[in-house]
Image (tube, rainbow, N blue to C red):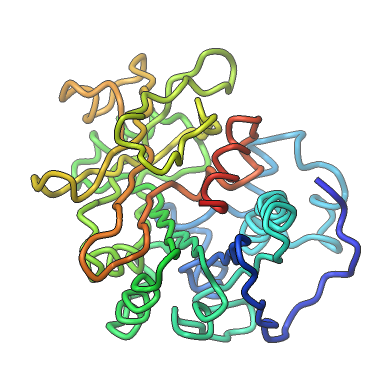
Length: 337
């Protein structure tokens, strides 16, 4: 990745990008309330992000460089962990800018300064491909508004548009504490609480858009070697647009959502890639006989919707979890087709 040639800015409005034929304008929308997430009481065990102090303790010594560990340089609470997300998205943003020639803005539903930005024309007017990362904890009550659904419907009525939806995992949905403990021991990440439920806002958008999918569980993928995720099981015969051209695998993350299809209607949505599960660790989903989970899905244009709807978890676009040429091919496909 090339180094940025300009300084970072904050607290200013986005400068619209002009349309350029053959070069997509990509935007990222994070559907959380930053204040609600950062202000969560760290004494509560469930449904919150880790503090940076907890991250440092678990990942030691990975974050002991002063730029992370010095409280005079980097926030040590939950806000510090949220800032790691932004750091980790930068390589994806840089890759997309180098590929398309356009910068990639990151919008937040409610940002650090309390500015509220729903999905509306301000976000969509100069966007061709929109990524929506469903990283809002359900307890923060980020509900999708009818006007947001209408704005996305109008956006997707334009030829050549696409929306990539990434509702995050849903760990500990059961009221049975023994089931929650089984899920926790399955994924094996000490930073994830026994219950961590995400994506109220994105679930609402999906319902309004008629996307027949629910994010379920937090499943540990199978690996070939240490932290090297096992290859995808792909349905290339269904991949008419070549979304998975040159793609054999994504990156490793300890707890990934299963995108359960909730319709029996054929051809509404295609499961293009499934991920093998680490079956050495029991989980209710594998005990029911499943060995793979749905990882990447595509809803082709239909009716008045001229644009594509895709589903892929936000961790696929984060450098926190590594990457290789296969992953970069996937990024390139999403922002080029």
